[in-house]
Every structure is written in C-alpha cells, then in structure tokens.
Image (cartoon, rainbow, N blue to C red; front, side):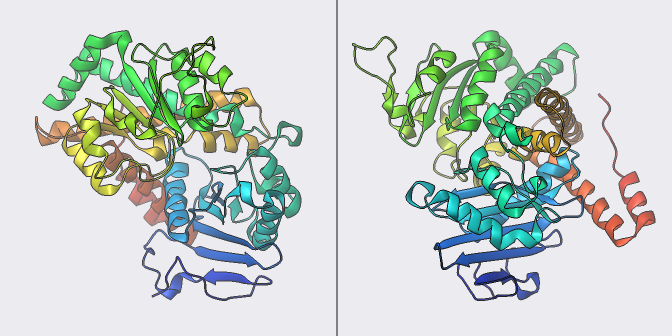
Length: 446
C-alpha cells in the first residue's frame, strides 16, 4: 500500500514530479475518487508540493493552494473531497481538488515556490484544476500562479487589476454570516409556523428565542474568514464576544467592538500585538488562545485549521452551553467529535455548506462578473442551500420520533452525493439511469 505521506519517484511530467496512481491501492480511494494524487519536488528551489484532483464529474476540480509546514497528502486529499461536496452542494460547475505547498511561506522565497509549483502542475491547469487562495496564500500569489501557467483562468482570487474578485473582500466570511442568519431564521420559523420538531430542537429554539438580540458568538481564527465573519455578524447586530488566533484570545462578555478591533488589527499580524496597558485608548482582555473553549457562548464558529473540535475540545463546548456550531474552516470537526456533539443535540452547520462563499465568489470571478454579483449569489445560494438542508433534516426527525437529533451534515451529504453520482453517470453516457436515479430524490418544499 502506498503511504501518502512519503515520497516516491515518478517523472512523466518533468523533473522530479511524483505521482500516485489511484490503482496503487491508496487507502483513501473510494467510488468518488481521487482521480489523481500528485507530489512534486523541484531540486532547484527545494519546493515540495501536493495536488489532489478528487472528482471532475461536475467540472474541473476547484480548490485553493494551502502553503504551510503542516501540509500532507492526506490532509490535501481530505480538503479536496470537501471541495467535491462543497461545489456540488452549491450547484457549481466545478469538481473537487486541492493544492498544497509544504513549507512556512515566511521562511522560503514564496514567489519562486509558487512559480515552481505552477510549473510542475501546468499540464492540469485549468482543464482539470483551478486554483485559489487558502491558508498561507494571497491574491498576489494567484497573480504569480496565473502568469506562470499562462492562463488567467488557471485560478481565482486574483487581484482586481487582473479581473479578480479577491477573497480578501471577505466572500467566505460573508457566507458564514449568511449561514448563521439562515439557521437562526429557521429556528424562529419552527416556533412561528408551529412546525413539528423533536423535543431537543424545540428546546434549542426556546433557548435562543429567550435571548433574542443577546445571542453570543465566539470565533476561533481571525484571519480572512474569521475577521470578515465577525464584521458581517456585527452588521447583523449579532454579538461577537470573543475571537482568537494562534497568539491569543480576545474576550468581552458584553460584546467586542468589531469595527474598532479590525481597525486596530490593520497594522498588526496577531491578536497578542493589541494594547493591554492603560496608556492606550482601546484596551483588550487578551487570554491564552485555548481559553476560547472555556467561555460560555451560544454559537461557536471554528474559522482556523482542521481538527480543532475533537474528543478533547468537544466536551468543553457542551459544558459551556454551545448550542450551534457553524463551520467556517474546512474539516474543523473530527468524525468522533461530530457524532458526540450531534448525540448531545448540538446543531452543526457543516463546512461544505457554511463556508462555500469563497468558491461561489470564485465561480462569479471565473465567469468575468462583478463583486456585487458575487455577494448577491453567495447570499442566494447559501440561504437556499442551508435552508434546504435544515428542512430536509427536520423532515427526517419528524419520522423518527421526539428524541432524534438534527443531523444536518448527513442530510446535506446525501444531497451532494446525489448530485455527484448523477454527474458521474452522465459522464459515462448512462443518461437514462441518471435520470431515474435523480427522479427518486424527493425535494422538500418550504
């Protein structure tokens, strides 16, 4: 069996390009993919990279390039698979893929490494892979990438001068805020419309209803996703009481002044750089970053890295009265933690629904349309997709009894798989089979 975290030699794409064939028996392979797993190495720069093209039945694989020391092929595959479900759920003509460069971007020549990675994977761009920004990469990296590929369609998230809609405008964070607002509206509808629901869901609805405009949110991660999620939630008058990054946790139980915080962070790289002494006009209570799991809040938004909600941290969220989790990051919750939280009636809006604003904005850029059209489409698609998943989940628990949980991830995943499965059948030319398979999928009318 191939070890996806080790390197083996294969050179059909140029100097020192390494490729895993799906026929090699890699343990992650299943009926959905991946179609290609590439590992590349450039001895001139020292660049090591990974590209996973998971499933292209609905279109070329779409996914960002992650630039971090922690990148592994297994992680990149999991992120690519998330993109498969995300693009399908959003109804976009993209498949799932992901790129990764294995280094701390601040400790290498970032431009040369991006150029080297682009050169190595050029045969696949943009016909099978369309890149974007991710952790460690910016709109400037996308400019370098597109120029090296020689095709502006090779990536999205480019600078505006190149016709791009940069993720730095907050498209992903905006989508997270829309997902949360839609969830709260759904819970209000249960009571307003007198919808049949299980006791745990009724309890959740009543609990949030009594708080009304005093619902509290904490956000783990204050980068592009977390900071803009905070901004757009603040615009909705939803109280953000805490935010964290790798350096610390800023908390105020009465609610943070988000516009002021974002202004104060403009010339700073981390939260721990904020002033704490009396000589400064704006003071911040900066705690250890892990204290984010030890404060009472209604809603928790992980907007950092993968696996932060795990067997150790999930019980802490339950202990501190978290009722809703909106996944702003990709794969922030481990499978066992997810099951534990669902079993304890925590409502989770999964990543491939909640944080799809970035890829929806990428689609608008890919079509050559405007920023306003991007934000309008993000609101439309995420509102409808989250609402559909919630109502479909509600229909399931109505059939199962008063103690059943609302498992939005399972319901939304079934919808995404139906879309990809039908596309895979169509690609094979099995049109009549695909039509029959999709006809069996019932739609909830709301």
